[in-house]
Image (cartoon, rainbow, N blue to C red; front, side, top):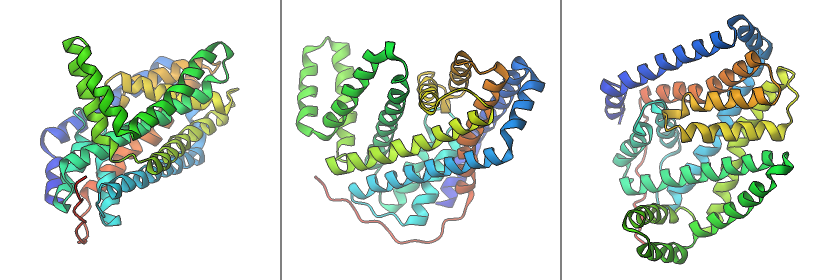
Length: 326
């Protein structure tokens, strides 16, 4: 496994990782110069080393809760990966977060394969993670929207959509029915619909009702941990922003980063976060400082931990339980 992981952190993947780091560094410096280098530096100083350490700790809470969720998915699929090995493999996937083509997720599947975990099952767990993350971030955004009465229709839409999606995800009958109805759509839409329902069907095994609730709670707690770190950073800057608004800004920024289709949401998340903070009354240098610090403490901290995990020699462990077919 160590040989495989070394191969993954070499060649074009290593070049892409280095390129993403250099591009981000240039972008962050340019961002700071645009906002006023001295003012941004001063704002980062006001945030303080202690708060940055606290933000890193909250990121560890996020990673830990998501790791626990990942373990539950693998157990549901019939696998028992040794704890130390599972931690290392999960963290290793973060090393390539900022590279294109979802290389980190592919790495997890590659490292799990020698333990008997099929690629199809790794994909099911991965897709389940992404869906669970999306629902959690949408729920966080809904909390913030509640602060804006004129957006109440959107709040009701979220309140209805999220439970309905949970029900759909847990029901094989509803998924099969939806897939059948795709045949009535125009050919292109029908193809897209079939692909969407095939993906949802592949994740359904990870979402029996009891596990759906557990995974959703873990996801919401994980992303709220980072959201609270963001709020505390804003408090250090004496921002007049409520915790609900901070969670809303953080959630919307994560969604904007995902919508940008840039690896790790690079650029899109930072711009959205800075813009929303500035619209909520935070001076531009402070908004830039808060955005940079939280992204360094979340995204880039994950990349560093992933690189360390990827380079660690794996301890010899037992094998897994081969899953039974449905």
